[in-house]
Figure 1 (tube, rainbow, N blue to C red):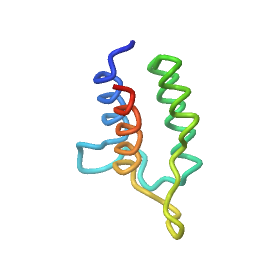
Figure 2: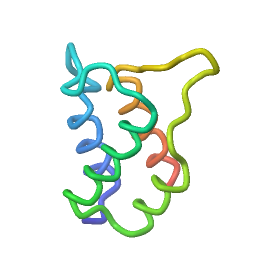
Figure 3: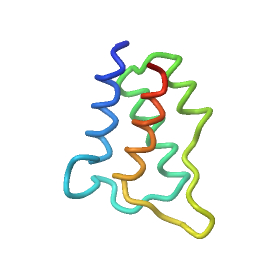
Length: 84
């Protein structure tokens, strides 16, 4: 799979970016980063995309402990968009 648009669609669908709620509920940074790597491996993302995801884990704002999946999905989708 090398089509960036397809990868972005998988990320957005997995995190519920365009739906009412996230399938994972509130997530910590650690959970979000581990889950994104799991999603990438499960969907056979190319090595360059997997390296990009691992090298740029999501970091919440100073006082933020949790985030919903929609924000996390947007972060990773925008990260992958930078490849184009």
